[in-house]
Length: 486
Image (tube, rainbow, N blue to C red; front, side):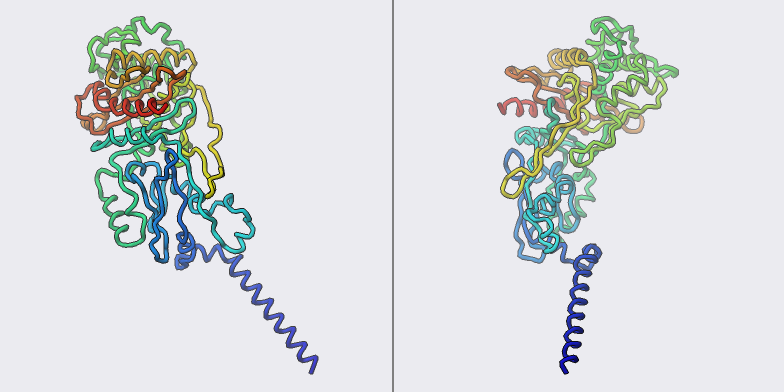
C-alpha cells in the first residue's frame, strides 16, 4: 500500500512539474507571440493602465494624461496642441504614435529598460514602470512667435542656436490639435478622417518633412562655394555678368527682378538678389565644388534625425551647365526643408561650422533625475571661417540696405537673405516666400539664433522682395523673442 501511495505521489509531482513547465512555456517562450496576436488586448490594457510621462517645453509640460475609467484607462492630453503638434506628434489608442511621442515612446510609456530598477524582476512579473519625461530644447517664446506669425498662412519656421544645434522653434502651418485623436472611440475616427480629407494637409510637418525650392536663399551656399574655391576674391569687383544672362548651351535668357544687376559686384548682387550674377557664378565654380559645399551644409543627407527623421534636402550632382546655373539660384532640382535652410544660416553665424540639430535636451526618470542627455553633436566645416566672416557682412548688408530691411532689430546685429522660389508648371504657382537669418544681441559675443521661414501663400509680387515682405517679419519676431530672453 505504501508503495502505491509513493507511486501516486511521484505521478502527482510529475504532473505538477509538467504544469509548471507548460506555464513557463506559455508565459516566457510564447509570450512574444501572444503579445503580437491582434486578439490579445492585454498589452494595450497594460500600456494604458498608467499615465504617460510628459513632454516639457521651458520646464512646463505641454502634454498630460486623462483618466477615462475605461479598459484603456489613460488618454493623452495636450496643452496648446496645434502650436506644439509639429514637435510632439500624437499618441493615439487607435492610430499609434508619431514624432516625439513615437521616438521617445519607450521613456514616455515606461517601457524603456533604463527606467527599471530591477530589469530581470520586471521581465518575470511583466510589470511596467512609470513613464519618464522628455525635456525639449524649444524656446517657448520663440515657438509662440513663430506660430502666431504664421497664423492663417501655409508655411513653416525652424530656428536654431548656431553654436550648439539646439532647435529653438519648429512650427508648421496650418497645424492640428492632436487631442481628438487620443481616444479609441468614434470621435477619434471622425477626427482622423477629417484631418486626412483636409486639402491643406494640416498633419504634414512642413518644417522637417516638406522640401521646397529654396530660391535665392540658396545664394548663401553659392557664395560660400565661390569664396572657398577662390572664384571670388574681391566682393566689390565687377563680375562681368550680363543682364539678361543666357544659360550655357541654350537660348534661354535669365533675367532679374531687381534693376542694376548688369556687371554688379558680388556684394551688390547678394544685397539685391541678382539671379544673373549668381547663376553665372555657380557655373564658374563648377559642379564638383558646388556639390561639395552643398554636402557640407547638409544637402543630400538622408540620415538626419532630430530624433525623428528629417526629409532629405537635395542638390543634384548630375548637371549640365544650364542646370547648374539654375540650381545655383535655388531652382531646378534643388530642394530644402526649412530646417536645412536654418542650418545654412546657422553655419554662417557659427564661423562656418555646422552642428547637427537636435530637439531633445534630456530624458528624466519620474522623480526628475536624469536618464540620458543629448551629448555632443557632430560638427563639420561647411566653409572657411574667413568665408563665414565675409558672408555675415553680406547678410547684414541685406538687412541694413537690401531686400531684408523688415528683419532689422534695434540694438542687434541681424543678417539675412530673402528669396522667392518659383514652382508649378511653367512657374505658374504662387511663389514661395523665403527668409533665412541670424541675430546677435548687443551684449552677445556671437549670434544666438538662426531662423528659416517659408510662406507658401505669399501675397506680394513675384520678385525676391516677397521674402522680405512675407517671411522676414516672422523671422524678426522669432529672433526678438530669443534675444529678449536674457
